[in-house]
Image (cartoon, rainbow, N blue to C red; front, side):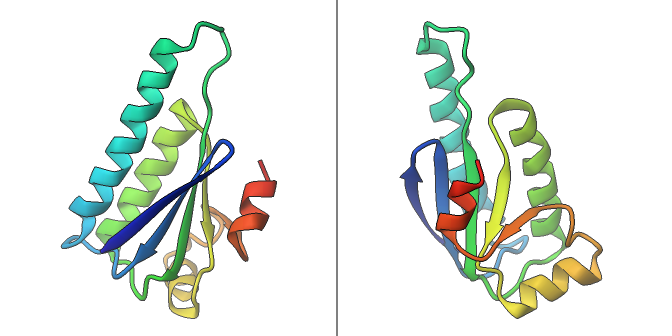
Length: 123
């Protein structure tokens, strides 16, 4: 899996390419851990009482398939982000990924948007 990271305000955008499966999950987890670590450091150096929050926007346009391990990780990640950072938003879902979410009854578990600008505006 190839992942490109961009930032826009308080949102971190990950543009993902390739399958999100048990075989490729380590690469995805490494990127997430770097993001979490970065925001943990920001929290330690922030002198105000205001918590640093960030939404994670996952652009899945070039992700043709997500298996059960990938879905489980996204659910765990959503819970972790809600506690520590912000929200997870899925954008540019292709027909196959939308169908996988529907069949697994997870279509309402994530905030979904048509594109990145729409997701970023919905902070």
